[in-house]
Length: 97
Image 1: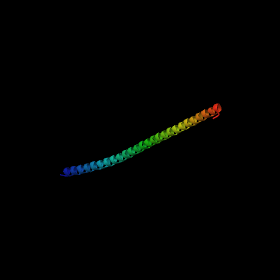
Image 2: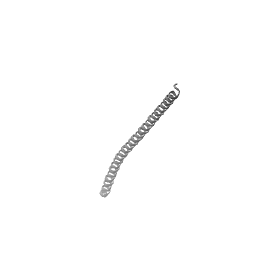
Image 3: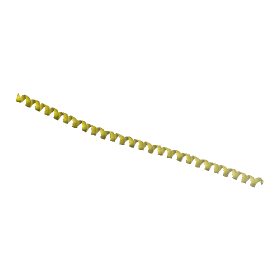
Image 4: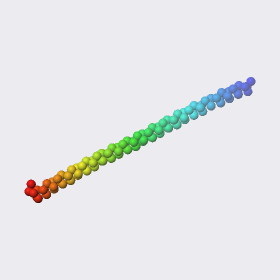
């Protein structure tokens, strides 16, 4: 009888230890999940920052290209105006017009 009671007490203590270990394990899993979630969030932020930088570079490149196109047009118009002026000046020298 006493042995039976001691066995029951032992089993109850064993169950309590098992429950405490499970609770501790659950807490550790929660902490790991939180850490993993934070890391995933940080990676997402880094990806978004990288994409934003690439977008800024693409916009800057497009703007530079438009500026170069504008400069090329300006140079071409200047050359055409100079050519037109030169032709008129030569015509004036030849014919007095």
